[in-house]
Amino acid sequence: MAQMKLRAKLTMEKVHLALETVGLTAEKNKLENDCREGASELRTTDQKCSRLEQRKVQLTDQCKGLLKRAKAICKMQPDQSLPEDLRNAFSKLPDTLDEVDAMLNEERSRAECFTGLSENVVDEYNRREQEIKQMEKELEEKSNALNAYRQNISEAKERWLNPLKHLVEQINEKFSAFFRSMQCAGEVDLHSENEVIAESQHTAEVEVSLCITFNHL
Image (cartoon, rainbow, N blue to C red; front, top):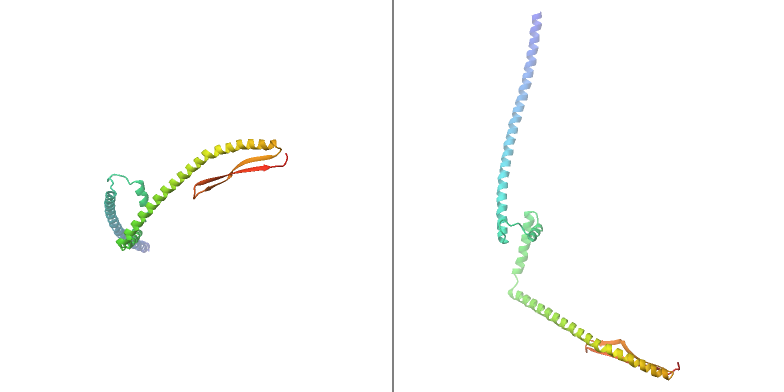
C-alpha cells in the first residue's frame, strides 16, 4: 500500500516535471524565435545605418564640391569665409530644393520674356534713358545757375536798399521838422514791406510815399 502511494506520488511529480519541461521548452522556443527576429531586425537596422552613412558621406562630398565651385565663381579663396553680404543673400533663398527650382523656373521665364524683345526696342530704351539723364543734368545745372542769380540779386538789393532806407530816414526827419515848424505834419516813408520782386523781369520796385497833414498840431 505504501509502495503504491509512493509510486503514485512519483508519477504525479513526473507529470508535473513533464508539464514544466513542456512549458520551459515552449518559452525557450519563443525566446529563440524572438532572438532570431531581433537579430534579423538588428542586421536590417545596421544595413540601413550603413547606407545612411554612405549617403551622408556622398552628400558631404557633394556639398564640399558645390561650395568650392561657388567660391570659385565668387572669386573667393578655398579657405576664405563667406562675406556678410553673400551670407545675407543666401539667407533670403528658399530652404528646400523644390522651392529653389520653382524660383529658378520663374527667373528663367522672366529672362525668356526679355530675350524676346527686339534690338530696336532695347536701343530705343537706352537712348531715351541717356536723354533723360542728360536732361536731368541740364535741369540741375540751370537750377543751380538760377539760384546763384537770385542770390546775387538779393545781395545787390541789400547793398542799395539799406543805404536808401537810411537816406529816406534822414529826409523824413528834415521833412517832418519843416512841417512841424508850420504847425503841420509831414512824413516821407519807404514802403519796403510792399516790395515786389518780378521773377520774370528780375526787377525790384520800391515805393516812396509822401504823407502831409495840414491840420494844426
